[in-house]
Image 1 (cartoon, rainbow, N blue to C red):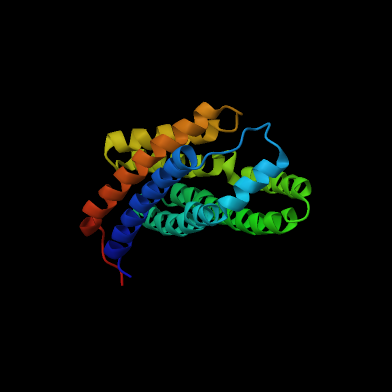
Image 2 (tube, helix red, strand yellow):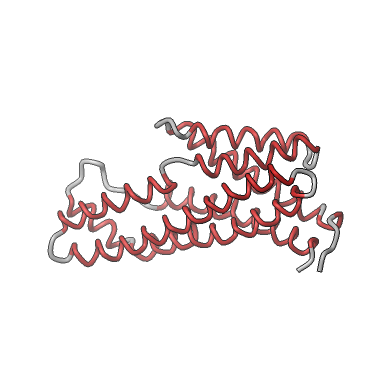
Length: 222
């Protein structure tokens, strides 16, 4: 694959990631009606059972498919900035690859856990929801509850781009903002998670369009 083709594929992957983010926000925030936090275990189990298919599909798209696209984007951005900033590019790619692993692990654990919870809940809904709580803690700990690793990746990529003027200035500043917001999710404050998620949607779209438009400027290497 040539550099030009990889840049186009990376740009397309970034735009698709933004669409996955938007779709997840719409479904989780506007379509699914979650039980009250004080609802009975049976009500919570029934919610999981009634929405099993849509939750499974969301896990596959929001985690597994997202991580596959992310891997392509990490590789494409590494290729783009490695010539100008090899050390920073390698460091950024390390965090990018780690993020890919964490995201795909979260999705697989969540889907397998959901199947097991539904199986247990046929006879004991209360115990099933205790298991689901454990599954949720693991998936949140891997990445759903904080975005430090993803934030560091975006931040390091943006710093490398800023140092060598590889991206438009506003895109670079947006990336730094996204990265800092991701790192700040270490604090248990939903505001930082929301800032990271919403601003990263814009960053994904912008970086994707930029990579596609400038792909012809990349040197071909067969």
